[in-house]
Amino acid sequence: MAIPLTYSLRSIAVRKGSSAMAVGGIALVVVVFITLLSLAAGFRRVVTASGDPRNVIVLRKGADAELQSQVMRDTARDLTELPLVAEEDGRKLVVFESIIILSRPKRSGGETNVTIRGTQPLSPVVHADVRLTEGRWFTPGSDEAVLGIGLARRLQDAGLGQTITVGRNTWHVVGVFEAGGSGLESELWIDGDLLQSSFHRDGVFQSVLFRTAGSAAAAAEELNALTTRDLRLRAIQALTEREYYEKQAKLMADVITILGGLLTAIMSTGAIAGAMNTMYAAVSQRRREIGCLLAMGFTPEAVWMAFMVESLLLATLGAAVGCTASLAFHGMRTGMTNWATFSETAFQFLVTPQILATATLISLLMGFLGGVVPAVHAARMKVVEALRRA
Amino acid sequence: MNAQPIIELRRVSKLYHKGDADIHPLDDLSLTIDRGDFVALMGPSGSGKTTLLNLVGGLDTPTAGEVLVCGQNLTELSARELARWRCDHVAFIFQAYNLLPVLTAYQNVELPLTLLPLTRQQRRAHVLTALDIVGLSDRLHHRPDELSGGQEQRVAIARALAADPELLLADEPTGDLDAHSAEEIMALLVTLNRQYGKTIIIVTHDPKVAAVAHRQLHLEKGVLTLDVDTLEKGA
Image (cartoon, rainbow over all chains, first blue to last red; front, side):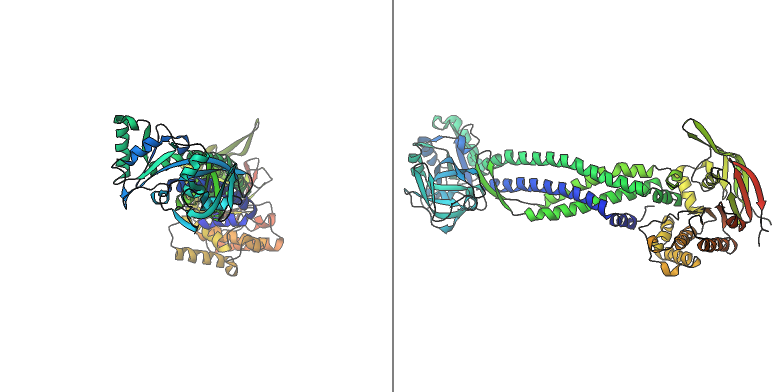
Protein backbone atom coordinates (compact mmCIF):
# COMPACT_ATOMS: atom_id res chain seq x y z
CA MET A 1 0.00 0.00 0.00
CA ALA A 2 1.35 3.39 -0.98
CA ILE A 3 2.05 6.22 1.42
CA PRO A 4 -0.57 8.91 0.68
CA LEU A 5 0.42 11.52 -1.90
CA THR A 6 -0.41 14.24 0.65
CA TYR A 7 2.74 13.29 2.55
CA SER A 8 5.01 13.91 -0.46
CA LEU A 9 3.18 17.08 -1.48
CA ARG A 10 3.26 18.59 1.99
CA SER A 11 6.90 17.65 2.47
CA ILE A 12 7.80 19.68 -0.62
CA ALA A 13 5.74 22.63 0.57
CA VAL A 14 7.29 22.56 4.05
CA ARG A 15 10.90 22.55 2.79
CA LYS A 16 10.41 25.64 0.66
CA GLY A 17 14.08 26.64 0.42
CA SER A 18 15.62 23.37 -0.69
CA SER A 19 12.59 22.54 -2.85
CA ALA A 20 12.92 25.89 -4.62
CA MET A 21 16.63 25.27 -5.25
CA ALA A 22 15.94 21.87 -6.83
CA VAL A 23 13.03 23.22 -8.88
CA GLY A 24 15.13 26.21 -9.98
CA GLY A 25 18.02 24.00 -11.10
CA ILE A 26 15.74 21.81 -13.18
CA ALA A 27 13.86 24.83 -14.57
CA LEU A 28 17.15 26.39 -15.69
CA VAL A 29 18.08 23.28 -17.67
CA VAL A 30 14.60 23.24 -19.20
CA VAL A 31 14.93 26.88 -20.28
CA VAL A 32 18.33 26.30 -21.90
CA PHE A 33 17.12 23.14 -23.62
CA ILE A 34 13.93 24.73 -24.95
CA THR A 35 15.77 27.87 -26.04
CA LEU A 36 18.28 25.98 -28.14
CA LEU A 37 15.74 23.60 -29.61
CA SER A 38 13.33 26.43 -30.39
CA LEU A 39 16.22 28.21 -32.10
CA ALA A 40 16.85 25.13 -34.25
CA ALA A 41 13.14 24.68 -34.91
CA GLY A 42 12.71 28.34 -35.92
CA PHE A 43 15.72 28.19 -38.21
CA ARG A 44 14.57 24.92 -39.76
CA ARG A 45 11.09 26.28 -40.40
CA VAL A 46 12.35 29.43 -42.11
CA VAL A 47 14.76 27.58 -44.34
CA THR A 48 12.40 24.78 -45.28
CA ALA A 49 9.57 27.27 -45.85
CA SER A 50 11.74 28.78 -48.56
CA GLY A 51 10.89 26.23 -51.19
CA ASP A 52 7.85 26.19 -53.43
CA PRO A 53 6.71 22.56 -53.84
CA ARG A 54 6.19 23.16 -57.58
CA ASN A 55 9.73 24.48 -58.21
CA VAL A 56 12.97 22.88 -59.35
CA ILE A 57 16.35 24.54 -58.80
CA VAL A 58 19.28 23.85 -61.07
CA LEU A 59 22.85 24.15 -59.77
CA ARG A 60 26.33 23.14 -60.85
CA LYS A 61 26.85 19.44 -60.35
CA GLY A 62 28.23 18.81 -56.85
CA ALA A 63 27.21 22.20 -55.48
CA ASP A 64 25.27 22.14 -52.19
CA ALA A 65 24.36 25.81 -52.25
CA GLU A 66 23.93 28.61 -54.77
CA LEU A 67 27.11 30.21 -53.46
CA GLN A 68 29.17 27.28 -54.73
CA SER A 69 27.27 27.00 -57.98
CA GLN A 70 27.75 28.32 -61.52
CA VAL A 71 25.35 27.84 -64.37
CA MET A 72 26.45 29.24 -67.71
CA ARG A 73 24.08 31.48 -69.69
CA ASP A 74 23.87 29.02 -72.61
CA THR A 75 22.92 26.17 -70.32
CA ALA A 76 20.33 28.37 -68.66
CA ARG A 77 18.81 29.18 -72.05
CA ASP A 78 18.76 25.51 -73.03
CA LEU A 79 16.88 24.75 -69.81
CA THR A 80 14.26 27.34 -70.66
CA GLU A 81 13.38 25.38 -73.78
CA LEU A 82 12.63 22.18 -71.91
CA PRO A 83 8.98 21.12 -71.83
CA LEU A 84 9.34 20.54 -68.07
CA VAL A 85 9.10 24.31 -67.53
CA ALA A 86 5.61 25.64 -66.91
CA GLU A 87 4.20 28.54 -68.88
CA GLU A 88 1.91 31.34 -67.79
CA ASP A 89 0.47 33.98 -70.09
CA GLY A 90 2.89 32.89 -72.78
CA ARG A 91 5.91 33.33 -70.50
CA LYS A 92 8.16 30.51 -69.38
CA LEU A 93 8.22 30.54 -65.57
CA VAL A 94 11.97 30.40 -65.21
CA VAL A 95 14.50 32.80 -63.69
CA PHE A 96 18.29 32.94 -63.88
CA GLU A 97 19.66 34.37 -60.67
CA SER A 98 23.07 35.46 -59.38
CA ILE A 99 24.00 36.09 -55.80
CA ILE A 100 26.80 37.81 -53.98
CA ILE A 101 27.48 38.06 -50.26
CA LEU A 102 28.32 41.41 -48.70
CA SER A 103 29.01 42.40 -45.16
CA ARG A 104 26.65 44.98 -43.63
CA PRO A 105 26.32 46.48 -40.12
CA LYS A 106 23.57 45.10 -37.89
CA ARG A 107 21.30 47.19 -35.67
CA SER A 108 22.45 45.17 -32.69
CA GLY A 109 26.09 45.96 -33.47
CA GLY A 110 28.70 44.09 -35.43
CA GLU A 111 28.42 43.04 -39.02
CA THR A 112 26.69 40.24 -40.81
CA ASN A 113 26.79 38.75 -44.26
CA VAL A 114 23.87 39.65 -46.47
CA THR A 115 22.79 37.80 -49.59
CA ILE A 116 22.26 40.15 -52.53
CA ARG A 117 20.25 38.44 -55.24
CA GLY A 118 20.32 39.57 -58.82
CA THR A 119 16.80 38.84 -59.97
CA GLN A 120 14.67 38.96 -63.09
CA PRO A 121 11.20 40.42 -63.48
CA LEU A 122 9.61 37.01 -62.99
CA SER A 123 11.50 36.30 -59.74
CA PRO A 124 8.63 37.48 -57.48
CA VAL A 125 6.32 35.15 -59.43
CA VAL A 126 8.47 32.04 -59.51
CA HIS A 127 9.61 32.30 -55.87
CA ALA A 128 6.95 31.22 -53.38
CA ASP A 129 4.66 33.67 -51.59
CA VAL A 130 6.69 36.79 -52.41
CA ARG A 131 4.62 39.91 -51.74
CA LEU A 132 5.41 43.60 -51.34
CA THR A 133 4.58 45.05 -47.93
CA GLU A 134 5.85 48.57 -48.55
CA GLY A 135 6.84 50.69 -51.56
CA ARG A 136 7.12 49.16 -55.01
CA TRP A 137 9.23 46.71 -57.00
CA PHE A 138 12.44 48.13 -58.44
CA THR A 139 12.54 49.32 -62.04
CA PRO A 140 14.51 46.84 -64.21
CA GLY A 141 17.89 48.22 -65.19
CA SER A 142 17.89 50.84 -62.45
CA ASP A 143 19.98 51.11 -59.28
CA GLU A 144 16.92 50.38 -57.17
CA ALA A 145 16.52 47.52 -54.73
CA VAL A 146 13.87 45.81 -52.63
CA LEU A 147 14.66 44.50 -49.19
CA GLY A 148 13.38 41.39 -47.43
CA ILE A 149 11.39 42.27 -44.32
CA GLY A 150 13.61 40.15 -42.04
CA LEU A 151 16.67 42.05 -43.17
CA ALA A 152 14.89 45.40 -42.86
CA ARG A 153 14.33 44.61 -39.16
CA ARG A 154 17.92 43.59 -38.47
CA LEU A 155 20.17 45.77 -40.64
CA GLN A 156 21.30 49.21 -39.63
CA ASP A 157 20.11 52.09 -41.82
CA ALA A 158 18.23 49.73 -44.09
CA GLY A 159 14.65 50.47 -44.89
CA LEU A 160 12.35 52.03 -47.35
CA GLY A 161 13.86 55.23 -48.81
CA GLN A 162 17.34 54.53 -47.56
CA THR A 163 20.39 53.70 -49.62
CA ILE A 164 22.79 50.81 -49.35
CA THR A 165 26.30 51.57 -50.54
CA VAL A 166 28.86 48.92 -51.18
CA GLY A 167 32.12 50.07 -52.76
CA ARG A 168 31.23 52.10 -55.85
CA ASN A 169 27.69 50.78 -55.94
CA THR A 170 24.72 52.44 -54.29
CA TRP A 171 21.22 50.98 -54.26
CA HIS A 172 18.09 52.90 -53.32
CA VAL A 173 15.61 50.83 -51.38
CA VAL A 174 12.21 51.36 -53.00
CA GLY A 175 10.31 48.45 -51.52
CA VAL A 176 10.13 45.90 -48.70
CA PHE A 177 8.83 42.41 -49.35
CA GLU A 178 7.82 39.39 -47.38
CA ALA A 179 8.07 35.78 -48.52
CA GLY A 180 5.94 33.65 -46.20
CA GLY A 181 8.55 33.76 -43.43
CA SER A 182 11.14 32.09 -45.66
CA GLY A 183 14.87 32.77 -45.95
CA LEU A 184 14.21 35.05 -48.94
CA GLU A 185 13.08 37.64 -46.40
CA SER A 186 16.75 37.92 -45.38
CA GLU A 187 17.87 39.00 -48.88
CA LEU A 188 18.33 42.22 -50.81
CA TRP A 189 17.03 41.93 -54.38
CA ILE A 190 18.43 44.01 -57.18
CA ASP A 191 18.33 43.85 -60.96
CA GLY A 192 20.16 40.75 -62.19
CA ASP A 193 21.78 42.40 -65.18
CA LEU A 194 23.05 45.26 -62.99
CA LEU A 195 24.53 42.77 -60.54
CA GLN A 196 26.17 40.89 -63.38
CA SER A 197 27.85 44.03 -64.75
CA SER A 198 28.69 45.60 -61.38
CA PHE A 199 30.35 42.49 -60.08
CA HIS A 200 31.78 41.14 -63.35
CA ARG A 201 29.62 38.07 -63.47
CA ASP A 202 28.82 38.27 -67.17
CA GLY A 203 27.41 35.07 -68.55
CA VAL A 204 27.42 33.19 -65.24
CA PHE A 205 24.48 32.64 -62.90
CA GLN A 206 24.35 30.85 -59.58
CA SER A 207 21.08 29.08 -60.19
CA VAL A 208 18.19 28.56 -62.51
CA LEU A 209 14.80 28.23 -60.86
CA PHE A 210 11.77 27.07 -62.76
CA ARG A 211 8.15 26.22 -62.05
CA THR A 212 7.31 22.76 -63.29
CA ALA A 213 4.37 21.87 -65.40
CA GLY A 214 3.76 18.70 -63.34
CA SER A 215 5.40 17.20 -60.29
CA ALA A 216 8.62 18.91 -59.18
CA ALA A 217 10.14 15.61 -58.01
CA ALA A 218 9.43 13.93 -61.33
CA ALA A 219 10.77 16.94 -63.24
CA ALA A 220 14.00 16.98 -61.20
CA GLU A 221 14.42 13.26 -61.79
CA GLU A 222 13.79 13.62 -65.49
CA LEU A 223 16.20 16.53 -65.78
CA ASN A 224 18.91 14.65 -63.89
CA ALA A 225 18.43 11.71 -66.24
CA LEU A 226 18.75 14.11 -69.16
CA THR A 227 22.10 15.46 -67.84
CA THR A 228 23.64 12.02 -68.39
CA ARG A 229 22.53 11.95 -72.03
CA ASP A 230 22.73 15.57 -73.15
CA LEU A 231 26.26 16.92 -73.26
CA ARG A 232 25.03 20.50 -73.00
CA LEU A 233 23.51 19.74 -69.61
CA ARG A 234 26.20 17.49 -68.17
CA ALA A 235 27.57 20.15 -65.77
CA ILE A 236 24.32 20.66 -63.87
CA GLN A 237 22.10 18.92 -61.36
CA ALA A 238 18.45 19.46 -60.48
CA LEU A 239 16.78 19.33 -57.09
CA THR A 240 13.30 20.17 -56.00
CA GLU A 241 13.45 23.54 -54.30
CA ARG A 242 12.08 21.99 -51.06
CA GLU A 243 14.79 19.34 -51.08
CA TYR A 244 17.44 22.01 -51.67
CA TYR A 245 16.39 24.10 -48.66
CA GLU A 246 15.88 21.07 -46.42
CA LYS A 247 19.50 20.08 -47.09
CA GLN A 248 20.61 23.62 -46.25
CA ALA A 249 18.68 23.60 -42.97
CA LYS A 250 19.80 20.17 -41.90
CA LEU A 251 23.44 20.89 -41.11
CA MET A 252 22.79 24.05 -39.10
CA ALA A 253 19.72 22.69 -37.30
CA ASP A 254 21.50 19.43 -36.52
CA VAL A 255 24.48 21.29 -35.08
CA ILE A 256 22.25 23.48 -32.88
CA THR A 257 20.30 20.41 -31.75
CA ILE A 258 23.49 18.50 -30.91
CA LEU A 259 24.95 21.52 -29.11
CA GLY A 260 21.66 21.89 -27.26
CA GLY A 261 21.77 18.23 -26.32
CA LEU A 262 25.37 18.49 -25.09
CA LEU A 263 24.73 21.66 -23.11
CA THR A 264 21.57 20.14 -21.63
CA ALA A 265 23.46 16.98 -20.70
CA ILE A 266 26.19 18.98 -18.95
CA MET A 267 23.74 21.23 -17.11
CA SER A 268 21.52 18.25 -16.28
CA THR A 269 24.39 16.70 -14.36
CA GLY A 270 24.38 19.77 -12.12
CA ALA A 271 20.61 19.75 -11.78
CA ILE A 272 20.57 16.03 -10.99
CA ALA A 273 23.22 16.61 -8.32
CA GLY A 274 21.06 19.44 -6.94
CA ALA A 275 17.94 17.27 -6.87
CA MET A 276 19.93 14.42 -5.33
CA ASN A 277 21.28 16.73 -2.66
CA THR A 278 17.77 17.95 -1.86
CA MET A 279 16.46 14.40 -1.64
CA TYR A 280 19.40 13.19 0.48
CA ALA A 281 18.77 16.09 2.85
CA ALA A 282 15.07 15.14 2.93
CA VAL A 283 15.89 11.52 3.75
CA SER A 284 18.40 12.53 6.41
CA GLN A 285 16.05 15.03 8.06
CA ARG A 286 13.17 12.56 8.06
CA ARG A 287 15.05 9.50 9.26
CA ARG A 288 12.71 8.97 12.18
CA GLU A 289 9.63 9.60 10.06
CA ILE A 290 10.85 6.84 7.77
CA GLY A 291 11.43 4.57 10.77
CA CYS A 292 7.93 5.34 11.99
CA LEU A 293 6.37 4.57 8.59
CA LEU A 294 8.23 1.26 8.44
CA ALA A 295 7.22 0.45 12.04
CA MET A 296 3.55 1.06 11.14
CA GLY A 297 3.77 -1.57 8.46
CA PHE A 298 4.54 0.40 5.30
CA THR A 299 6.89 -1.64 3.14
CA PRO A 300 10.35 -0.42 2.04
CA GLU A 301 8.92 -0.25 -1.51
CA ALA A 302 6.21 2.16 -0.31
CA VAL A 303 8.89 4.35 1.33
CA TRP A 304 10.95 4.23 -1.88
CA MET A 305 7.91 5.23 -3.89
CA ALA A 306 7.05 8.14 -1.54
CA PHE A 307 10.51 9.65 -2.02
CA MET A 308 10.48 8.98 -5.76
CA VAL A 309 7.09 10.69 -6.02
CA GLU A 310 8.54 13.65 -4.15
CA SER A 311 11.53 13.86 -6.48
CA LEU A 312 9.32 13.52 -9.56
CA LEU A 313 6.98 16.20 -8.22
CA LEU A 314 9.95 18.54 -7.84
CA ALA A 315 10.95 17.72 -11.42
CA THR A 316 7.41 18.34 -12.66
CA LEU A 317 7.40 21.71 -10.93
CA GLY A 318 10.80 22.47 -12.51
CA ALA A 319 9.42 21.52 -15.93
CA ALA A 320 6.35 23.70 -15.42
CA VAL A 321 8.42 26.72 -14.36
CA GLY A 322 10.97 26.17 -17.15
CA CYS A 323 8.37 25.64 -19.88
CA THR A 324 6.38 28.69 -18.78
CA ALA A 325 9.51 30.86 -18.71
CA SER A 326 10.58 29.55 -22.13
CA LEU A 327 7.27 30.53 -23.71
CA ALA A 328 8.48 34.12 -23.35
CA PHE A 329 11.01 33.33 -26.12
CA HIS A 330 8.36 32.04 -28.50
CA GLY A 331 8.13 34.31 -31.53
CA MET A 332 11.18 36.36 -30.54
CA ARG A 333 13.03 37.48 -33.66
CA THR A 334 16.69 36.72 -34.17
CA GLY A 335 19.12 35.97 -36.95
CA MET A 336 22.03 33.69 -37.61
CA THR A 337 24.54 33.06 -40.31
CA ASN A 338 23.39 30.11 -42.34
CA TRP A 339 26.47 27.96 -42.89
CA ALA A 340 25.18 26.81 -46.23
CA THR A 341 24.87 30.34 -47.63
CA PHE A 342 27.29 32.17 -45.32
CA SER A 343 24.70 34.88 -44.98
CA GLU A 344 22.29 36.19 -42.41
CA THR A 345 19.01 34.33 -42.01
CA ALA A 346 16.38 36.06 -39.90
CA PHE A 347 13.92 33.85 -38.03
CA GLN A 348 11.83 33.51 -34.88
CA PHE A 349 12.23 31.20 -31.90
CA LEU A 350 9.70 28.44 -32.32
CA VAL A 351 8.60 26.72 -29.08
CA THR A 352 6.61 23.72 -30.29
CA PRO A 353 4.47 21.33 -28.20
CA GLN A 354 6.95 18.59 -29.13
CA ILE A 355 9.86 20.59 -27.67
CA LEU A 356 7.85 21.27 -24.48
CA ALA A 357 6.99 17.57 -24.18
CA THR A 358 10.63 16.55 -24.67
CA ALA A 359 11.78 19.10 -22.07
CA THR A 360 9.20 17.74 -19.61
CA LEU A 361 10.40 14.18 -20.19
CA ILE A 362 14.00 15.28 -19.63
CA SER A 363 12.92 16.97 -16.37
CA LEU A 364 11.24 13.78 -15.21
CA LEU A 365 14.37 11.85 -16.08
CA MET A 366 16.41 14.31 -13.99
CA GLY A 367 13.92 13.87 -11.14
CA PHE A 368 14.16 10.10 -11.43
CA LEU A 369 17.97 10.07 -11.50
CA GLY A 370 18.19 12.63 -8.70
CA GLY A 371 15.72 10.76 -6.52
CA VAL A 372 16.43 7.12 -7.10
CA VAL A 373 19.56 6.74 -4.95
CA PRO A 374 18.30 8.73 -1.93
CA ALA A 375 14.97 6.86 -2.18
CA VAL A 376 16.79 3.50 -2.14
CA HIS A 377 18.77 4.77 0.85
CA ALA A 378 15.50 5.61 2.62
CA ALA A 379 13.91 2.26 1.79
CA ARG A 380 16.93 0.31 3.01
CA MET A 381 17.01 1.95 6.43
CA LYS A 382 16.87 -0.42 9.38
CA VAL A 383 13.77 0.48 11.36
CA VAL A 384 15.54 0.25 14.70
CA GLU A 385 18.38 2.53 13.58
CA ALA A 386 16.02 4.98 11.90
CA LEU A 387 13.97 5.32 15.09
CA ARG A 388 16.98 5.81 17.34
CA ARG A 389 17.21 9.35 18.70
CA ALA A 390 20.20 11.30 17.46
CA MET B 1 -7.27 -15.84 35.87
CA ASN B 2 -7.22 -18.00 32.80
CA ALA B 3 -5.20 -15.53 30.76
CA GLN B 4 -3.49 -16.80 27.67
CA PRO B 5 0.00 -15.75 26.71
CA ILE B 6 0.14 -13.13 23.96
CA ILE B 7 3.96 -13.02 24.02
CA GLU B 8 6.37 -15.87 24.49
CA LEU B 9 10.12 -15.48 24.26
CA ARG B 10 12.10 -18.71 24.18
CA ARG B 11 15.80 -18.44 24.99
CA VAL B 12 16.17 -15.23 23.03
CA SER B 13 19.57 -13.68 22.52
CA LYS B 14 20.61 -10.63 20.59
CA LEU B 15 24.17 -9.93 19.63
CA TYR B 16 25.59 -6.76 18.06
CA HIS B 17 29.07 -6.12 16.83
CA LYS B 18 30.37 -2.67 17.55
CA GLY B 19 33.90 -2.32 16.27
CA ASP B 20 35.79 -5.26 17.74
CA ALA B 21 33.42 -5.60 20.68
CA ASP B 22 30.47 -7.99 20.93
CA ILE B 23 27.46 -6.53 22.68
CA HIS B 24 24.70 -8.72 24.12
CA PRO B 25 21.69 -6.54 24.82
CA LEU B 26 19.69 -9.73 25.48
CA ASP B 27 21.18 -12.97 26.68
CA ASP B 28 19.21 -16.23 26.66
CA LEU B 29 16.01 -14.56 27.84
CA SER B 30 12.77 -16.52 28.25
CA LEU B 31 9.57 -14.73 29.11
CA THR B 32 5.79 -15.00 28.86
CA ILE B 33 3.32 -12.13 28.93
CA ASP B 34 -0.43 -12.70 29.13
CA ARG B 35 -3.08 -11.16 26.98
CA GLY B 36 -4.52 -8.04 28.60
CA ASP B 37 -1.46 -7.50 30.77
CA PHE B 38 0.14 -4.14 31.49
CA VAL B 39 3.87 -4.66 31.85
CA ALA B 40 6.58 -2.15 32.72
CA LEU B 41 10.08 -2.89 31.47
CA MET B 42 12.69 -1.28 33.69
CA GLY B 43 16.42 -1.24 33.98
CA PRO B 44 19.43 0.96 33.45
CA SER B 45 20.42 2.31 30.06
CA GLY B 46 21.81 -0.44 27.82
CA SER B 47 20.06 -3.19 29.80
CA GLY B 48 18.16 -4.38 26.73
CA LYS B 49 14.70 -2.88 27.36
CA THR B 50 14.29 -1.24 23.95
CA THR B 51 15.85 -4.26 22.22
CA LEU B 52 13.26 -6.48 23.89
CA LEU B 53 10.47 -4.12 22.82
CA ASN B 54 11.77 -4.06 19.25
CA LEU B 55 11.89 -7.87 19.10
CA VAL B 56 8.34 -8.19 20.44
CA GLY B 57 7.16 -5.57 17.95
CA GLY B 58 8.80 -7.31 15.00
CA LEU B 59 11.11 -4.36 14.33
CA ASP B 60 14.20 -6.46 14.93
CA THR B 61 15.08 -10.13 14.79
CA PRO B 62 16.89 -12.16 17.48
CA THR B 63 20.31 -13.68 16.95
CA ALA B 64 19.07 -16.87 18.64
CA GLY B 65 15.81 -18.15 20.12
CA GLU B 66 12.19 -17.71 19.17
CA VAL B 67 9.77 -14.83 19.57
CA LEU B 68 6.07 -15.76 19.48
CA VAL B 69 3.60 -12.89 19.51
CA CYS B 70 -0.15 -13.07 18.92
CA GLY B 71 0.26 -16.71 17.97
CA GLN B 72 2.91 -16.05 15.34
CA ASN B 73 6.56 -17.07 15.46
CA LEU B 74 8.15 -13.83 14.28
CA THR B 75 11.49 -15.46 13.56
CA GLU B 76 9.85 -17.35 10.70
CA LEU B 77 8.62 -14.22 8.89
CA SER B 78 10.34 -12.33 6.08
CA ALA B 79 10.77 -8.55 6.30
CA ARG B 80 7.68 -8.04 4.12
CA GLU B 81 5.61 -10.49 6.19
CA LEU B 82 6.79 -8.78 9.37
CA ALA B 83 5.64 -5.40 7.99
CA ARG B 84 2.20 -6.88 7.29
CA TRP B 85 2.10 -8.56 10.70
CA ARG B 86 2.97 -5.31 12.50
CA CYS B 87 0.22 -3.53 10.65
CA ASP B 88 -2.35 -6.11 11.82
CA HIS B 89 -1.31 -6.76 15.42
CA VAL B 90 0.87 -4.15 17.01
CA ALA B 91 1.32 -0.41 17.38
CA PHE B 92 4.08 1.72 18.80
CA ILE B 93 4.15 4.79 21.00
CA PHE B 94 7.50 6.58 21.01
CA GLN B 95 9.11 8.95 23.48
CA ALA B 96 9.54 11.57 20.72
CA TYR B 97 5.95 10.98 19.45
CA ASN B 98 7.25 10.59 15.87
CA LEU B 99 4.24 12.22 14.27
CA LEU B 100 4.70 13.25 10.66
CA PRO B 101 5.06 17.02 10.99
CA VAL B 102 3.56 17.80 7.58
CA LEU B 103 0.28 16.01 8.33
CA THR B 104 -2.60 17.11 10.57
CA ALA B 105 -3.65 15.17 13.66
CA TYR B 106 -6.43 13.58 11.59
CA GLN B 107 -4.07 12.60 8.78
CA ASN B 108 -1.47 11.22 11.20
CA VAL B 109 -4.08 9.00 12.83
CA GLU B 110 -5.45 7.95 9.46
CA LEU B 111 -2.03 6.97 8.09
CA PRO B 112 -1.80 3.37 9.45
CA LEU B 113 -5.43 2.82 8.43
CA THR B 114 -4.53 3.33 4.79
CA LEU B 115 -2.76 -0.03 5.02
CA LEU B 116 -6.02 -1.79 5.85
CA PRO B 117 -8.90 -2.70 3.51
CA LEU B 118 -11.18 0.08 4.76
CA THR B 119 -13.34 2.59 2.90
CA ARG B 120 -12.77 6.30 3.41
CA GLN B 121 -15.91 6.44 5.61
CA GLN B 122 -14.71 3.51 7.70
CA ARG B 123 -11.31 5.15 8.11
CA ARG B 124 -12.97 8.38 9.15
CA ALA B 125 -15.03 6.57 11.79
CA HIS B 126 -11.89 4.91 13.20
CA VAL B 127 -9.95 8.18 13.28
CA LEU B 128 -12.74 10.11 14.99
CA THR B 129 -13.22 7.36 17.59
CA ALA B 130 -9.47 7.20 18.33
CA LEU B 131 -9.15 10.97 18.66
CA ASP B 132 -12.27 11.02 20.85
CA ILE B 133 -10.77 8.40 23.18
CA VAL B 134 -7.64 10.53 23.65
CA GLY B 135 -9.75 13.69 24.07
CA LEU B 136 -8.60 15.53 20.97
CA SER B 137 -11.77 15.69 18.89
CA ASP B 138 -11.32 19.45 18.71
CA ARG B 139 -7.80 19.28 17.28
CA LEU B 140 -8.45 17.28 14.10
CA HIS B 141 -6.88 19.75 11.71
CA HIS B 142 -3.97 20.91 13.83
CA ARG B 143 -0.45 20.04 12.77
CA PRO B 144 2.01 18.69 15.36
CA ASP B 145 3.74 22.06 15.68
CA GLU B 146 0.39 23.55 16.71
CA LEU B 147 -0.04 21.10 19.59
CA SER B 148 1.55 20.83 23.04
CA GLY B 149 3.86 17.90 23.84
CA GLY B 150 1.09 16.16 25.76
CA GLN B 151 -1.34 16.64 22.90
CA GLU B 152 1.21 15.34 20.39
CA GLN B 153 1.66 12.21 22.46
CA ARG B 154 -2.11 11.78 22.66
CA VAL B 155 -2.29 12.01 18.87
CA ALA B 156 0.46 9.39 18.72
CA ILE B 157 -1.60 7.18 21.04
CA ALA B 158 -4.69 7.75 18.88
CA ARG B 159 -2.63 6.72 15.84
CA ALA B 160 -1.55 3.59 17.70
CA LEU B 161 -5.15 2.82 18.65
CA ALA B 162 -6.81 3.58 15.33
CA ALA B 163 -6.25 0.20 13.73
CA ASP B 164 -7.37 -1.54 16.96
CA PRO B 165 -4.18 -3.56 17.56
CA GLU B 166 -3.97 -6.25 20.22
CA LEU B 167 -0.64 -5.04 21.51
CA LEU B 168 0.61 -1.53 22.34
CA LEU B 169 4.34 -1.07 22.79
CA ALA B 170 5.41 2.20 24.38
CA ASP B 171 9.05 3.27 24.64
CA GLU B 172 9.30 5.86 27.41
CA PRO B 173 6.09 7.58 26.31
CA THR B 174 6.25 10.16 29.11
CA GLY B 175 9.99 10.78 28.85
CA ASP B 176 9.65 14.13 27.07
CA LEU B 177 6.60 15.35 28.99
CA ASP B 178 6.06 17.48 32.09
CA ALA B 179 4.63 15.79 35.20
CA HIS B 180 1.03 16.80 34.54
CA SER B 181 1.02 15.66 30.92
CA ALA B 182 2.82 12.47 31.93
CA GLU B 183 0.04 11.69 34.43
CA GLU B 184 -2.60 12.29 31.76
CA ILE B 185 -0.84 9.97 29.34
CA MET B 186 -0.49 7.24 31.97
CA ALA B 187 -4.16 7.60 32.89
CA LEU B 188 -4.99 7.19 29.21
CA LEU B 189 -2.86 4.06 28.91
CA VAL B 190 -4.52 2.60 32.00
CA THR B 191 -7.92 3.27 30.42
CA LEU B 192 -6.83 1.57 27.22
CA ASN B 193 -5.71 -1.45 29.20
CA ARG B 194 -8.65 -1.71 31.54
CA GLN B 195 -11.56 -0.56 29.39
CA TYR B 196 -10.40 -1.62 25.96
CA GLY B 197 -8.40 -4.72 26.96
CA LYS B 198 -5.20 -3.70 25.19
CA THR B 199 -2.04 -5.51 26.19
CA ILE B 200 0.52 -2.83 26.94
CA ILE B 201 4.26 -3.05 27.41
CA ILE B 202 5.92 0.14 28.48
CA VAL B 203 9.62 0.85 28.76
CA THR B 204 10.32 3.36 31.52
CA HIS B 205 12.90 4.59 33.96
CA ASP B 206 10.26 6.25 36.11
CA PRO B 207 9.08 4.17 39.14
CA LYS B 208 5.83 6.18 39.30
CA VAL B 209 5.02 5.19 35.74
CA ALA B 210 6.01 1.59 36.43
CA ALA B 211 3.78 1.55 39.50
CA VAL B 212 0.73 1.82 37.25
CA ALA B 213 1.61 -1.50 35.55
CA HIS B 214 0.43 -4.94 36.69
CA ARG B 215 3.86 -6.34 36.34
CA GLN B 216 7.37 -4.95 36.47
CA LEU B 217 10.23 -6.66 34.68
CA HIS B 218 13.73 -5.54 35.55
CA LEU B 219 16.49 -6.16 33.08
CA GLU B 220 20.19 -5.84 33.63
CA LYS B 221 22.82 -6.58 31.00
CA GLY B 222 20.26 -8.44 28.93
CA VAL B 223 19.14 -10.72 31.74
CA LEU B 224 15.83 -10.64 33.61
CA THR B 225 16.73 -9.89 37.22
CA LEU B 226 13.33 -9.18 38.76
CA ASP B 227 9.74 -10.01 37.86
CA VAL B 228 7.23 -8.37 40.20
CA ASP B 229 3.41 -8.50 40.22
CA THR B 230 2.47 -5.05 41.45
CA LEU B 231 -1.30 -5.17 41.14
CA GLU B 232 -3.86 -7.80 41.27
CA LYS B 233 -4.69 -8.64 37.69
CA GLY B 234 -8.14 -7.96 36.36
CA ALA B 235 -8.70 -5.06 38.77
